[in-house]
Length: 145
Image 1 (tube, one colour):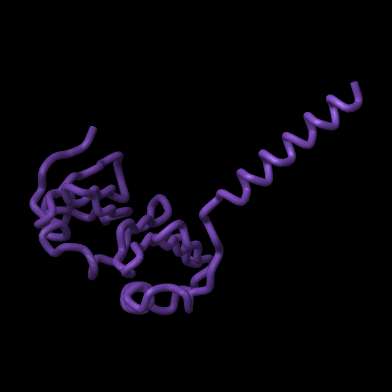
Image 2 (cartoon, rainbow, N blue to C red):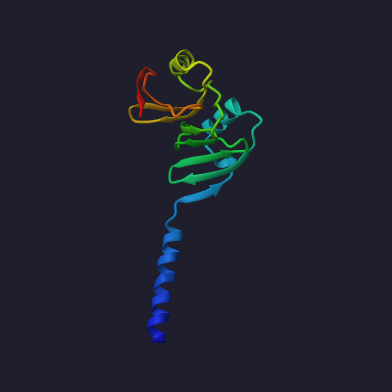
């Protein structure tokens, strides 16, 4: 009986160690970010401290002191930028057509998050439960339910 319990616990320990070692997330320093990522952060989030950088396979996830999270691909290009609820993102990096559409159609509402997709961009606004979809050139496609 004790032998079975020991073998069971040993097997559980091996599985746990394997699961932990298979985790591809690794905390790295901001110096390990691609140059384009650092340039993006200093351009659009100047003066905001980086609190954490994780390398996830070939992508990077950066947490900023103001609560914004920016995901970059291996080339250092942003793929997802997400602000805390109620906070608008700076718009300098967002396609001007998207910024103009939001300003015209949702006056006084800012962009809370933007994600690049295979088809274009998914945009969430600060107020209301509004999710907008734009194509790759920044043309409005639809409101996502």
